[in-house]
Amino acid sequence: MTKGQITNQIRTLRFLNGEMSQAELGQRIGVTRQTVAAIEAGKYSPSLEAAFRIAEVFGKSLDEVFQWER
Amino acid sequence: MPYREKVAWLSLIAMAVAFGPYLTLMTISPPTGPLPNLPALSFFAATVAVQLVILGVGHLWLRISSPQDARVPADERDRAIARRSLGAAYYTLLTGMVLVGIMLPFTSGGWMIINAAIAGIVLAEVVHYAVAVWSYRRGWHD
Image 1: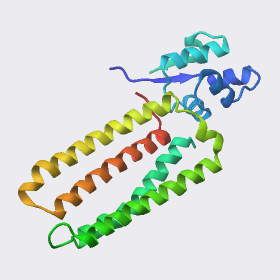
Image 2: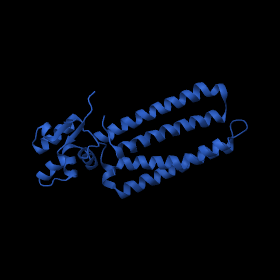
Image 3: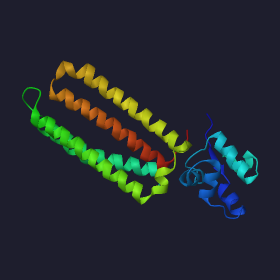
Image 4: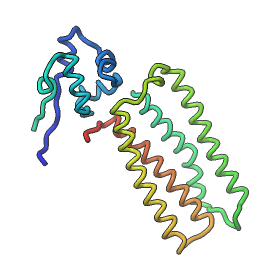
């Protein structure tokens, strides 16, 4: 199995969307503010469904929000 | 800190405060005499009562101090962490019960078996909440 980690652009995208709060993003995708913070910090890898929801909120494709880094 | 992490910390503290002294005392000076042993049973009942009081007061305090967080249903991360911690606790409990139910009867009896079973349950609960706290603190990547 190849080793790597999922990175994301959520912090940047929140900033570009009027400094959207973690709580607001969490509310829109159905998770808590703490879970959004954990995703942003790379401490939790969201489900595929949650990842698509996040991308949808920002009007981006999945690979513009999440990246796989080796 | 997520509400469910606070609950996990509370459960760990309640378990340590209530069952730490109980298991320590039972190890140092195990009860003697035939079963049932009223003083030992009373000590166990008091231990459970202490745990319930700590949990009751703690939950009340958490609900009063952060009422919105208490009402929020578990999200996918909470459920993933719950699955992971319960899985770890299950195998701990299974190992403990195999030791208590299959091996200890050949070497011990009476209160030794009872307290070993209690210790197994307590250890499984400690693993349950410790894995939950660890997962909230250090992250989750499955």
